[in-house]
Length: 151
Image 1 (cartoon, rainbow, N blue to C red):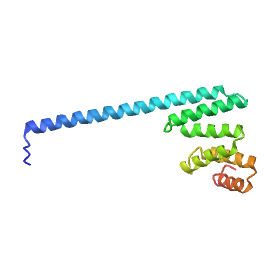
Image 2: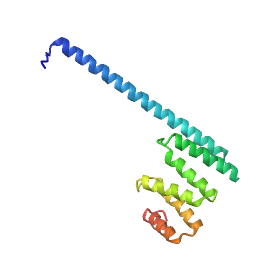
Image 3: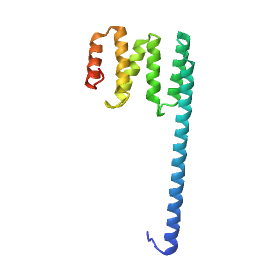
Image 4: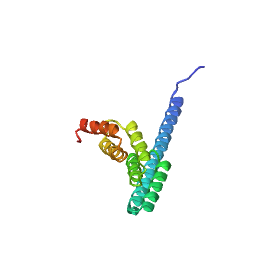
């Protein structure tokens, strides 16, 4: 294959590269905008649900179901861990301790040990272990919190 690098070919190649870069930047920008819009919509839905919670079981169960829908429809949003913690807490309020524990354990597996919400997750786990009287798990969680300087 014989390539001829003359001024016309270089100009065409340059224009093609510039157009490609512009198109890639535009598509990437659209994706970022779409993600930001999804984050905003999911966050607004989450806060709307929070405002509907009362202390009766029906309200709590309804809020939990709505939050689960928000999370399943938007699994990669920025506040997904916060929503998961809220769902775990609603399970706790409904005395569904095993379901609450599953969520907290899942969060622990996905978080970095120095993540700012780790103490919240461990404290939630601790409350469930206390209710279920799982003393060995409770001690283990207390030890983890103590290492973090929480208790």
